[in-house]
Image (cartoon, rainbow, N blue to C red; front, side, top):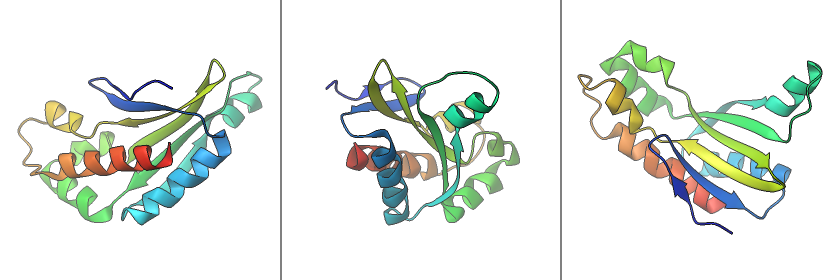
Length: 133
């Protein structure tokens, strides 16, 4: 299995676990870490309903109300980048977990006083991904 891949956008790991098992465990880890699952988008089913074949792909939206409130107080436009998302997907017979890096928000909103909220959330997202893999 590959090591974690970090780009300027996401933290991604490969997992040898089953797709549905990963999705279930990520939901549990989200709750254990003080966040809430807001919605799960089943991209595979959505595309299937439109006549397309696509491997497993779910987008899990998660939020921590206290931290969301803090960053939205700094700049309402940050709502374009939240809630945070963790994706579970299949590609070439392998399964991956990928989460957007919240510290990226600071690059788009350099004048917003975000404190350490983006770093806090990023730490939790990486923890959730590593614990679920």
